[in-house]
Length: 207
Image (cartoon, rainbow, N blue to C red; front, top):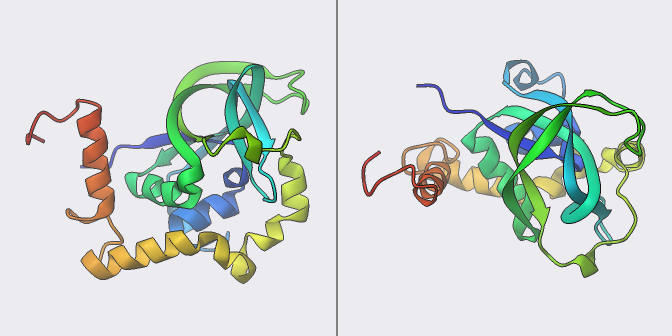
């Protein structure tokens, strides 16, 4: 049976395919065959009632709830439980993965949102900043600026440190069960079962 697909809304460095693939698949090289075989589908989207800020002394942003504000990002489908496991490690304990509703954009307007044409509303998971607003700058995080000035430090050998925790966790799971955490006793499977129990999908020990 095929693994159920997960969807997420990304608003920071993970909007860059190189970063997303490096986290989920261990490679940021677009010539790597994994880029042609994954099931990711990406569409521009808007998250309402939230605001994006630059994290102090960092290259990445955090999003917090805020009335009358919007965040433009990407809506990605085709993610697996293994991908989400890796993304959770990558994001760390400064964020909480939450379910939100976003609007897919049928037309992209200006950076200030003027001219956007919103389409269907969809549910997705995203990472909300929980480490305190005092750690956020008032300045809006700029994806184009990140691509232009910082991307080089997040890909290739120069960016290895950014993914060290993910790589170490995957290596440890692979050594333990040979599947990188995907096996019946792996962390990914255990985490999925815990989520299903919390959601009431599982009843006692019945699967």
